[in-house]
Image 1 (tube, helix red, strand yellow):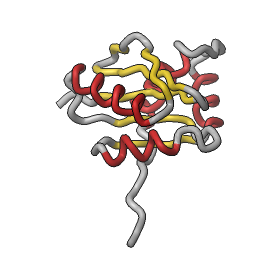
Image 2 (cartoon, helix red, strand yellow):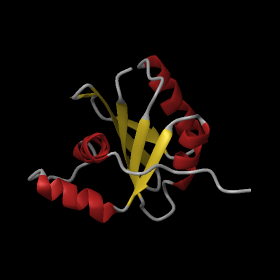
Image 3 (tube, helix red, strand yellow):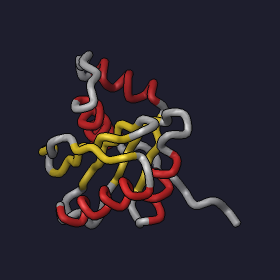
Length: 124
């Protein structure tokens, strides 16, 4: 099965995603940062034929917590990464542009290249 990576650039009101599969990235897609947006993302992922996924997002305040938990509970691998790591990776790729369309693609590329550690279930 081909590894599939999802880069997520999140803010308080919405989030942008890019899906990377076999070195090819989708166009950026925007969703609202709420339960309806999470469901829309999950439906879109299913339409893209995604079965296994490694999603990655920056640890940006608390804005990504609910989405990370939603994706984890949906059975996907999820990494919440220190933004400094992604910034350092961008520098190593000689990328200085920072926009809503570039950031999720960078995060997906970071996830594919580095394969950061994933969230784990809380011990009972």
